[in-house]
Image (tube, rainbow, N blue to C red; front, side, top):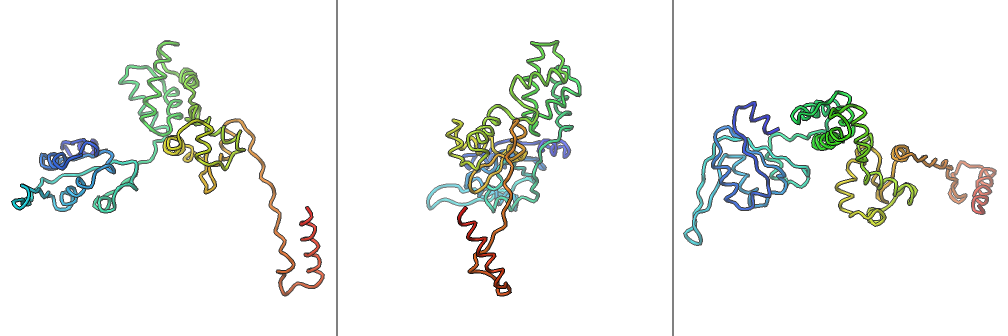
Length: 300
């Protein structure tokens, strides 16, 4: 997005990442060298250290930075004016941004996942750059299994291209794409082998759950943090996994997708209050009936 803004504004775009800005002079050098109207793009901005954030505050609000020159009693602070610039930050963890930094951005946008037709266009363009023939049906098949993410779509395209060049004539068709993705164990919903293993483990060994994260990690041999941060988000998004206070639950959609029959929920039996708590409007007969029903249920 930063590159698109720079192209529309006819300015330069300086790209960096937050981990690269470890020392104050790193970010000061970037800010001082910006030309009027330039765009500064910081990826993974939530990983900025506190010193870098403090330098950014006056730069974002007043277009200036305060630099300390000297040490000890001879130290003095000098304010350096900056050229007008646009700061663009990207993060997948907006909640990890400190409140003062987040509040200083004039516009906060969230990028949604791509639709199939959008991914199809991206795959077609990438195939042209790779000099790989592909038809619309083949591109759409790859797009449907890409989890709405262009990076995954391009990765799958390259693997399907390799398969088509070895096993076919190099052209990616619907049948070639479908066969190649099945070989790579990517199903029509974009689930890979590990995703299906997590769901099948929860269904087969724990009757669909609820099952705790640590228990699921021990049963599958995966790290608990990897399950929570890598595999769970997509399963939650497509509704195949539910996260509750008691643990993870495989939803009926997951049962059906993996070929299992979802369990039938038992009918709810209306609660019969204890005769001690009957209402004042009940007659003696109604009270005896309730007492009899409660006694019968107690013997079951």
